[in-house]
Image 1 (tube, rainbow, N blue to C red):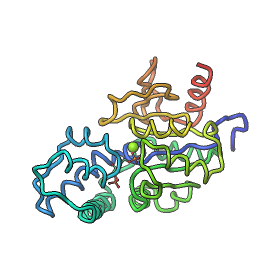
Image 2: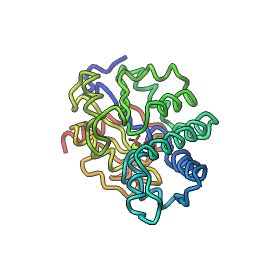
Image 3: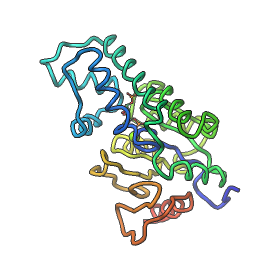
Image 4: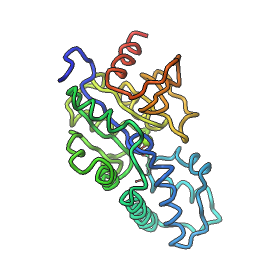
Amino acid sequence: MRNERSPIRALIFDVDGTLAETEAHGHRIAFNRAFAVWKLPVVWGVREYGELLDVTGGKERIRSYWHSHPELRALSDDEIAALHQLKTQFFLELLNQGKIPLRPGVELLLRDARDRGVRLGIATTTTRANIIALFTATMGTDALNWFEAIVAGDEVARKKPAPDVYKKVLHLLGLDPVQCVAVEDSEPGFRAAQAAGIPTLVAINQYTYHGSYPRAVCVIDGFQSTNIVQGLNLQPIPQLQVEHIEQWYAQALHS
Ligand code: XBP
Ligand code: MG
């Protein structure tokens, strides 16, 4: 039942790195497989890929890498699009093989939000196909209907850290920014949500723990056995729930 006093009408989730560790277990591997099929002399290691994540969008990431490596044969925009399409195919295969689970505690948090009448949205840089495949492979396609608004990277003019995806989700939900909390994992995503005026909870991961998240609602290390990264947190929270986010939201509002 919705908590009428709660200021949070909706949670808007990022996908990659937030709902699932897709960067570590999926995208990087898929990019390298596509490079190998095209016989390109490029392999993105774990550390290097973490640095490449500063550029959001798979096509943009390829283009940016090629620009900084003039020794490589130049790729046309059509070739980049085709290479990214092949990469997406490999990523979908990894999802369908069950190789990319949701982060621990994500499903229970989503269920808690639904039980409490908190609406759900998705604002991501990746493709809609990847979102559908992620839920099909984890919670089942019905779970996609839990999200009243889903906006993917290629459906807006500018990718994160521009606020476009978040602004479109707010419009579709018919809510003001401060009636929502964005759930992100990275600096580009955090900046996108902040630029849209949305209070933002950050769940860091192996690629984003070093980021700077000033004025975040809270910075945590995950959704289960949760430790608060910025601030005192004596006892881990066994399972993150909406009420924790409400508490942090209230504290952040009055700090
Ligand atoms: C993170 C991204 C995406 C992924 C790769 O998206 O920047 O580009 O790295 O996916 P999110 P694509 O906003 O969900 O964290 O190759 O489909 O872009
Ligand atoms: Mg992300």
